[in-house]
Length: 483
Ligand SMILES: Nc1nc2c(ncn2[C@@H]2O[C@H](COP(=O)(O)OP(=O)(O)OP(=O)(O)O)[C@@H](O)[C@H]2O)c(=O)[nH]1
Ligand code: SF4
Ligand SMILES: [Mg+2]
Image 1 (cartoon, rainbow, N blue to C red):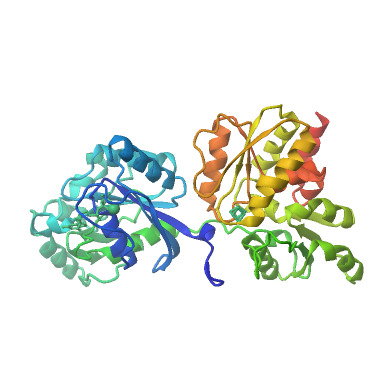
Image 2 (image 1 turned 30 degrees about the vertical axis):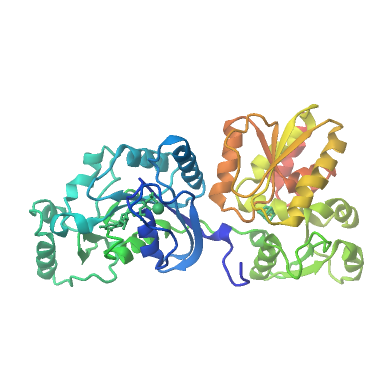
């Protein structure tokens, strides 16, 4: 990742799903304007998901993911389907690529059900529309009623459904042009205002009216990856679906006031990456500056000296979790204290669960298995905490013979039943959807889920203090200790 790049965890992840040979890879290549995936008429050409982070207009920073066919069969085919399924856990949006000459199949409907269960907004791209007779599209074929989809979903994006539906095949383009000319609009294959809806069928794309249906999850757009038809319009539909602004989340800035002083404790040992700060540290500094507060960065070994020398009292100290013990001792009790990893857990939406999950540390038994899960495969500092320091601290804290197993990168096991606890890293490289999926997986299987920062604070006896920024959680903890 370059210094100016948006981190992967912050990008909108868009997965292209569908049957083998529906043209997923061709469409991914057309949408990205790059030869990202291999295309061939052999069924099952894409055997592994292919991801690429890029800036895609008009969407902005995205990760585009091409997946293997969802209808693959046999032992190897089953493995490919499982890999495609894993992508569903991190897709913020899906493009369901169907073959327009075939229509929706059972496998496509199965995907639609999964999108709905997982609340993934999706667009149906009816590809290969160049093969339809005269380039015309039998519009009602994909409407909600025809597909048995819930009302309001599965709509074809049409400006004037009556005109389209009564039009004999082969005359759609002419009618669309006439209709738009009558309304004083331009018929164009260039950019159209998706917010105002578009007529998107065969080769015709017509500006919509304010009263036209808007792009909603389940809308269908006819495209041809081969001829480049409606590719820009597909991207506009994707942008319209992902464009719903989420409530802006902050790492820490929302809890600071302009003029606050914050100390960041960043150990620089042999496990720290050479010549740079890690992502959560960079993001926290940026957020503090955005809040109009001041950030002072020190190594753990310089904290005491810095506190003594500073004229003003800092409002907050944020430390790397592995230095929690020392930093807690050296930071006066009236200064708020937390860790990067706790802030990241709140940012990704699982801080409550992680605090509740930490209670499991008190009830671990000999032989209990603990899954240490990391979001990427290349971070030595996290690996050192996960494989060496934390197991040591936990064995000492519980006095039990615990068994530690690990997973890293995308390979998070679906079956968590063998484990008493999942101990997750800060997850800075994972997007929020994937982090929440992992948390939910554990919750659904009744397995406790916590993260490095919370567990380290707990074993050092400073969990309550490290949650002092979050009074409700600190109160919940105090209540738990009373029971
Ligand atoms: N006529 C026509 N052919 C297309 C179009 N898009 C893809 N194809 C052809 O369909 C075949 C399959 O395309 P791929 O892009 O490899 O399909 P896929 O869905 O990625 O297939 P798998 O990787 O096997 O799952 C290739 O021969 C493509 O040239 C299109 O818009 N029109
Ligand atoms: S292991 Fe986890 S916390 Fe560490 S860099 Fe990777 S995703 Fe981020
Ligand atoms: Mg493919």
